[in-house]
Image (tube, rainbow, N blue to C red):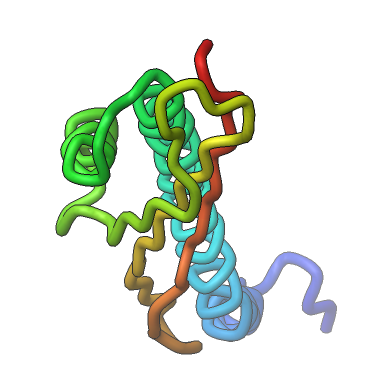
Length: 129
């Protein structure tokens, strides 16, 4: 007797087993890609915001202005990043204005890990521009 036209039950069981093995790996991969995208987006937003703050400091703004500019230029980073003015521009200065911001981004990848990435960006602008 031939089994070539018989039941497909063993094949369905094999497919279910393969899915059970592969599905956790796919879930980790998808969530890892999503978390990487969130981190990359936050880094780009933080970099642009710090550049704006450095421009404000280079044209005579204060440290308080820098923190407000970063918070306004990066509205999706909540809570607001920690802003530090490393170098400012006194009147008539020809140096550089430097502003650094640090943002802690939490992440969670199911079945693997969760934690916090500390994103740092530094903006530099020549004084008087």
